[in-house]
Image 1 (cartoon, one colour):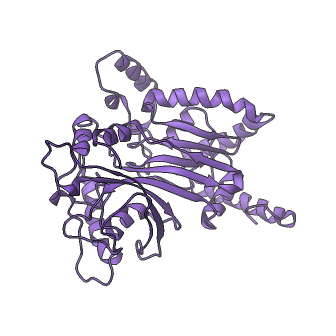
Image 2 (image 1 turned 135 degrees about the vertical axis):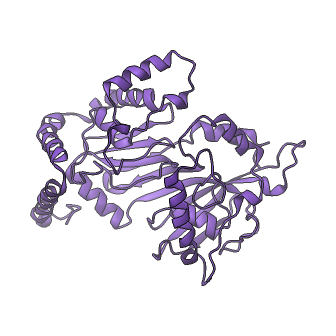
Image 3 (image 1 turned 45 degrees about the vertical axis):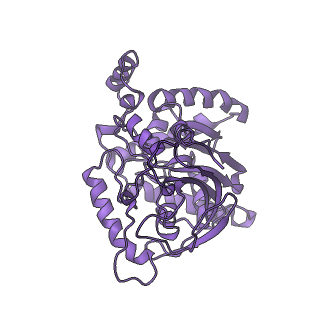
Length: 383
C-alpha cells in the first residue's frame, strides 16, 4: 500500500500519508509547527516543472556550500525531486535531539567562518557542530516534514561514522523509504578497519583465527536482544609495521567489507567487537581505547553499552569487555591521533560505503575519506 505499487491501493496510501501529516503537526511544538506549515506551502512551488537535469548545477552549488563548512569529505552522491543521498563526514551528527542555538548556522557564525579562512587555524577548528539536517535546510534543500524532530531522516549514521545516508525530500518519498527499509529491500555495505588478530582477552563468538584476503563469513549475534545478521568479506590485509617499529604482528590491520542483513543500532560495531573479537579501531564504545576526547555523554554511553555485552555474548553470566588498550595501537593509527589531536569531534574507522534502494533506482557509492587513505598509506602496504 505505502509503496503505491497497486493502483487499487493508491487511495489508501494517500490516506495514510494525510494521517501521518496530521500526526506530525499535532506532535510538533509551536515553532516547529510554523516551520512545517511554511515548508508545505513552499514545496509545491519549488518542485513544480523542474527537470532532473536542472539538479546537476544545484548539486555542485550545494556541495560547495557544505564543503565550505565541513571540508572535502562531505559530498552529494544523488539528488532528485524526492531524495537526496549525502556522503556524511565523520564528526557530523545526523540531527540534534535537542534544538538549541549551539548548532545553528547564523549570520555571525558565517562571518566568523570567513574570517577564520584567512587565519592559520586548522580545518577542524573551523567546523561547527551543525547537523546534517540543519546544513541541508540552510542550503535550501526541502526535507520531509513527517518527522518534525528529524526532518527527512529515515535512517541514521553514528556521529563518528562516515558515508552514505539518504534523506527524504517529500512526505510521499519518506513513507516509501520507510517501507523499503522495513521490508529490507535496501542494501547497505560498510568498510571497517579492524585488527588482523583477535585482541587479548576476547576471541569472539565466530571462530576466525586468521583473516586472509577474500575470506568471507557470517556473524549472527543478537543486538539489544533482537536478531542481527551480518556478512563480511576481507578486502585487504595491511602488513607489518616498519622494520624499526617495536609493534607485534597483532598490530596489523584488516580492511573489512560488512553487509548488514538486518538494521540494528551499532550492528557493525557490535559484530566486529563481539562476533570477530576485533573492535573497530578508535571505537569509543565497544573497546577500552578512548580516541581523542571523552565527554560525559560518551562515558555514560560506554557504561550503558558495557552492561549490554552479556546479551551479545553466548550464555555468559559475566560481562566480557574488549580490552583494545592491552594491545598497542598500530603506529599508523597513532599517527592519525597525533594529526587530529586538535579536532574535538569523534571519528572511528567505520564508513558506509554503499547504499542501494531499488524502489527509487538509487545505487550510491561513497569513497573512503582522505584521513582513511593517509592512515592506510602509513602502513607498509597491503598484501
